[in-house]
Image 1 (cartoon, rainbow, N blue to C red):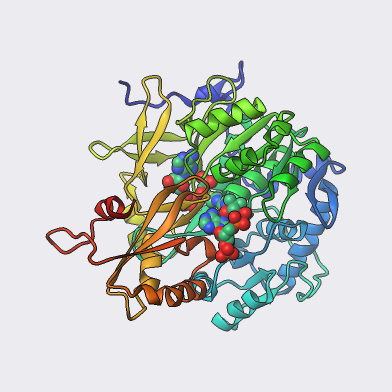
Image 2 (image 1 turned 90 degrees about the vertical axis):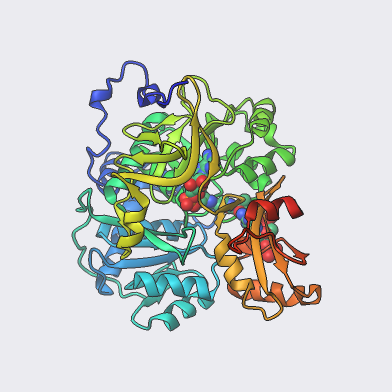
Length: 503
Ligand code: MLC
Ligand code: AMP
């Protein structure tokens, strides 16, 4: 068996010389986008329910205006701007403007509760916050009264008269501070550079043959890398169009693919599963490409989608710290149960002994925000240790076969058991609790809390605690009571045995 993944040349169109693939030639996404907008100002670029299609020229002008407002509000390159809003043109304008001005965008899930949002604000210390929910805006400002908060229309910011210098960032300049938890402790900000974002989007543009003729229907949120770093950034880099949906509804997605003559659809496995269950997946046969990622795509679901739609989905593998790493090839076999071949200029190997996937490449972040220790712990001889365990097929396709990190992926969202356990343990009736992920047909994994010494009568109180402290996707879908949690000789709870006990 070979220990080498297949070479990334397999992602290139026939005749393209790998030596000519320079992912950083355009230096930053804003510089590349500005070049596209100048060439094709009339191209329909962003569609949302409120505004219909907005052209590239309008996006250029509106984002320059928004950047002027940010500048007038006192934001300087390198300052953080927290953005938390449902998908819309206004959100895209704010995000693009921030990157054009050299601000560092801190995306925040709109479902976060006060505790979760306050942690981000305290840690990232943003200068500005663009937030579409007034309650969340109040939490942000209460956490740090130096933050200037506004809604996505930016109407609370002064209109700047002079346009500041835009699109000047260098590849090493910081662009995005994306929060992610580890096995221990609270969420850390992964600091991604302009070079990380550009190289990843450019690799996908090449690998997936993304062109200005493409239209993507994007029912994923813009506050995680899937929707933002892949869907939005890739669309703008290719000079293509994106149809934003503020929530996922299978019927609306199928209608949009038809009405907007969409060619691309990206989703997490739960989304593809629900499309199939809706009975309308057959209407997606006009797509050029469907992509699945963020969680394992069951090989059977892959085949069922192919049968219903004629689409052999491309499954790919990414991560907040690295944007995108590995993808099944556009030409050649799209193998169910594998994530494919490393993307252009990504190097992948398996750690001896553990099989942990190690990565290197222009897409890999430099480190966690103000966390030198966590950064040092996550690199081994310059390779980023993903916490995912891999295997490599004889002909070089990568499979993800397990995780070294304690993580539950529910519907494409990451849930860190430790965070949920810490919240539930606060209830006086709970002597201890283990949070595990159990297989689930819709969510992939379902969050289950196994409570020791708990009084079943206190379940309602535990649920209230979860509602107060945790975003909905982190809340246990089930609470199970046991007399005693299985422990090892050192008294540590053995999660594998907890799973056997209740699974
Ligand atoms: C919503 N709920 C979830 C949930 N999403 N619970 C568990 N897991 C989830 N993923 C909650 C809702 O708040 C609601 O709670 C209840 O479950 C029922 O919700 P629903 O209406 O069925 O869910 P819906 O709103 O339709 O959302 C489902 C979904 C969404 C699949 C569309 O979860 C989603 O957009 N997932 C994708 C997330 C994503 O973009 N991940 C990429 C991360 S980047 P209540 O209490 O109100 O009843 C990454 C890197 C990479 O991982 O490789 O891409
Ligand atoms: P996040 O930190 O939210 O970016 O989530 C990244 C994690 O999602 C990875 O470390 C993997 O565990 C998981 N992941 C992403 N894509 C896939 C995939 N196609 N198959 C299995 N796991 C995936």
